[in-house]
Amino acid sequence: METSADGSTWTSVYATTAGDGGTDDVTFPAIPARHVRVYGTQRATPYGYSLWEMEVYGT
Image 1 (cartoon, rainbow, N blue to C red):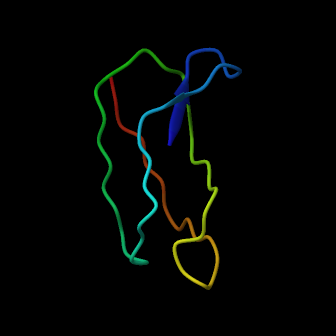
Image 2 (cartoon, rainbow, N blue to C red):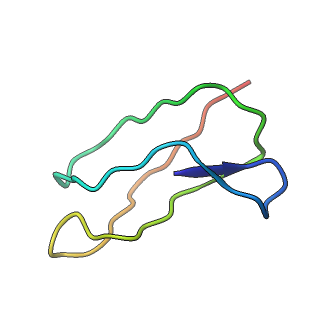
């Protein structure tokens, strides 16, 4: 997962190479960002990428 304040410069806030096909709750410190993206570079299962739901909370 990456965040950005301007939509062009991105900072990684979470990364993993292990996946079990289940739901993951990811938290990271509050930072000034307007954009959040999920950047997939490696399949966790032989079936490909799946993103069923993404929720971003903050103040």
